[in-house]
Length: 96
Picture 1 (spheres, one colour):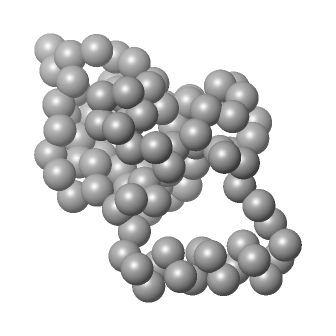
Picture 2: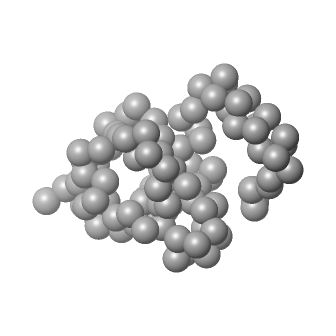
């Protein structure tokens, strides 16, 4: 059985029930999703799942089945500018 979901507006499918961190980085080459701790503590792998922030290292392909995932690469330029401004104003940094 395959797992189907949308990533940045594109329908994708995988047979492997791996973490979304692995799938997004290794299979889709989306490098904004970072492996900071592999246990959900740091947030470097944060993605949006149906508009809700989630940590990609904790979500499997099975849990993502039927959902829409957005990574930094899938944000609009306006959204990227808003995040950039917000991070810099707060003095926040993202590893990597």
